Image 1 (cartoon, one colour):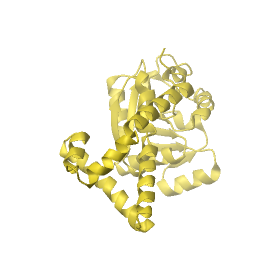
Image 2 (cartoon, rainbow, N blue to C red):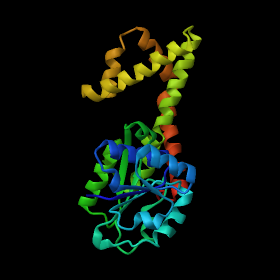
Image 3 (cartoon, rainbow, N blue to C red):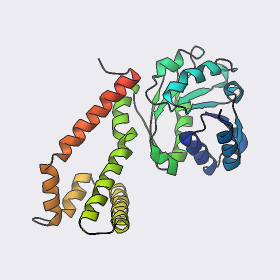
Image 4 (cartoon, rainbow, N blue to C red):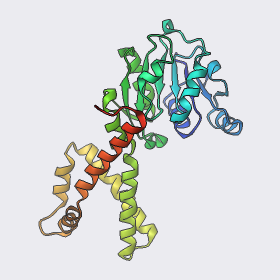
Length: 273
């Protein structure tokens, strides 16, 4: 039995708990920390788990401590964790979903040798389709990474990277949903401009995106191969692709992701030398 304490009852924390319950975790093995009374009451009612405002109480005896708060709240949480009975002999591990907070900053506030795993999630975890990248700290062992992976797989997929790659992960998948939504928004607007109703344009674009993603995943082919298969010589798709290339879509994405990576490094203090 693994006891899990999720510190932070916002959307991400709630999504993780809901995913764990759906994957078969017992409600008695889960506890959430939420300091806003109305939100705490809602979580307890919606999820059927114990919710407390006391970080130390929730953490004491837990095997996995999940920090799911905003980055600026992390220091306060770590201070409260200092009041808990943390014990390296119990193989406790800290999992941080706080964007931009380096592992060393967390390790410095924990007992010596305490294992820490940092994760960059993304918002599709709210519907069980998240992409999480995990980076182990100095003291995280293989079995602890397996536990973290199992927990996060309840809300999507998981890959392991070095912490030095977290800024790149943030640029690609952490911010990635926003790029997708922007493309969808642009295509819907274009469809409306072509005379379609907004409802029809939205249905066409959303299902096309869903279908294309499923085809990419299940076909085993590269995106370039699938694009080429749709692009008949001198056809409609070729005409559209030509305009997108002329507008510099590839270079725009390249610059955008580099900008996101730089900003991530600035915020988290993990910029490469």
